[in-house]
Length: 79
Image (cartoon, rainbow, N blue to C red; front, side, top):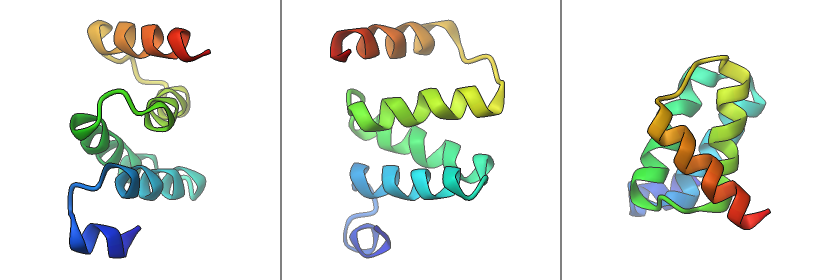
């Protein structure tokens, strides 16, 4: 993932992979900006949306209602 980002710093899959690794290591604060960056580039990436949902669960934060509605609607479509 880091090599892909060295070539293209906006590679959404590489950003999501680093976010997943950060979450697995308990580094929520590191994962959040990576997920946001990935979704800004590719807003309907299923895997990244699932990571964001997981992040929200872990963090206990209340997301803004528009983003939460968008996330839930997309997850319902792919379920």
